[in-house]
Structure formats: structure tokens, C-alpha cells
Length: 246
Image (cartoon, rainbow, N blue to C red; front, side):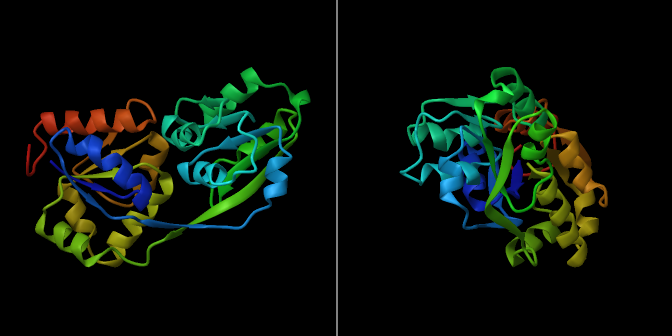
């Protein structure tokens, strides 16, 4: 099955091997371009706990040698936590892959009296963990560490593959990638091409970003993790999804 990944390049390339090992052909079309944003390192160093919901925020922390490697860090899932483990952070807690499980984990393990929490995030977010923690009585702040800017158009190669019907399934791991991908297809006059393609969404919330477009089918992962997405794509291929390599 020919799979198109719409994640930012870093995350897409990290996911590629697990799909290729399953026999899938993989192409990458990053819908969002990620760039760093300057933030107060002092504010981060003064925090008693750090919260991250993306691998890009984790990488920003990992590159700062002055950050205490024993500070508790709460990551939304295993993929987000991985750079922190590699950088030697000793107290990394992993949630189940989504914002509700992350908030629940923090509230179970941490009391409001333990000091300031810093949520290191992107410029655009769908869930403000700092605001959610404040509602539960915690001293929390948000620092913006990166910006994910939507592409202005799809690459000529991807447009050609869509027109030729050469893509079997398109993977969406966030609401914003789903939303902007469908906008870019509409802009290029490619929306009709999606009717013969399966969409694979990480969650119901992500799938809502696809509401403007008709798809061959839309699959929702069993849980919000990269492993669950890989399993779902394998199931789609096994069910006889149209395409190359099935």
C-alpha cells in the first residue's frame, strides 16, 4: 500500500521505517513547516515541572545543557518523550497519547503545592495545558518554543501522485495537518481525487479536520499513538485497500 505521511519532516522520517518494515511504500508531504521561536530559558529553568505535547518542544528542552536533568517532565506520549530519554532526563512521565490522559496523569502524580509548571508548546495549539492546570489550582505558565507554519501549496510530486491515483492512504496525526491538507487539495482542484483514497486519522478530533472532503473511507486509530496508527494501516492493507504493494 502506498502511504502518504503529512507530518512535519522530522516526525515523518521517524515514522517511515515502521511502515516500510510492514511492506508499505511511503511518501512524505509535510503540511506544516516547523521553525524555532525564542523563549525565556530562565523561566524554564525556574520551573519545578515541565509539560510537553510535541517532539519539537522536547527537542528544544533537550538542546539546553543548563536544564536540570532531574526535573520532572510530563510528555503526552512515548514519541514525545523519546528525545528526553536520549538527552538523559531521569524523571520523564509518559501519558497515553492525548491531552486528557496527560492532564489526568499530572493531576494524579502532582499536587498544586509543588511549584510552578511550565507548558512548552507551539504557537498554535488545540489544548492549552497551562490553562487546564490553572483551572485545577496549579501555578502554570505557557512558553512558546516553535511555530508550525502551513505550506502554501502541495508539492508538484504529490499533486501528480494524487491526479494519477497513485496514493492509497493518507495519514493525519493532528487536526491542523488534516485541516490544512484538505484546504491545499481544494486550492489545487484535487479534492475529487481524495474520493478514491483512505484517510487514516489518529483520533476522532483529528478526523474532524477532514470534514470538508469526501474520502473512500476514514479510519480512526484504536488509541492516539504511532504504534496504533501503524497497526491500523496494516489492517487497511489486509482488508484489500486499493493500491500498490497490497
